[in-house]
Image 1 (cartoon, rainbow, N blue to C red):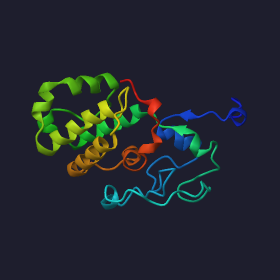
Image 2 (cartoon, helix red, strand yellow):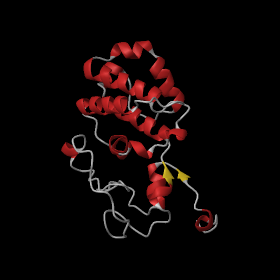
Image 3 (cartoon, rainbow, N blue to C red):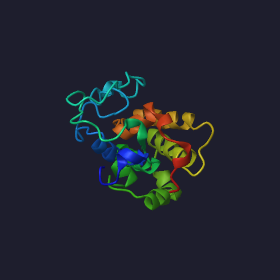
Length: 194
């Protein structure tokens, strides 16, 4: 940070949550309080989808709530690119879908693969009930929230997606937590083009 004169310029930073955790000096793996905005306890899964608002973090004090050292950057200087969230949502939906029926293995997806799967009519026919509802919600959110132009009423499709993921039994990852509790964290001008 010294080499790039960050203290002088105080740029805004667009990065994945791992990069954000690194710059905020948060413990990066299997942490209880992994959200740098809320005091979100990631472990009690029964509260994940039922409780939206939690106390805001008052500080990033080393030694408390998974903060290891003094942060390098102000937490208000970050943007989370929607592409990372889309990839995680895709991974969670595939993980929850009956793999024998869907003929898919959980893996690493990239934008073009997601677009191909969204257009695949055969894949749509393989899904039933809650799986189909979750997949349809995912496709709608990709278009209406992560697309080039964010829909005016994007909160409703995002909430539908979260409800369908809950019915499927998807665990709430930190990235899904951001959709659940921090929709205002995603600026309109940083939508993904994939």
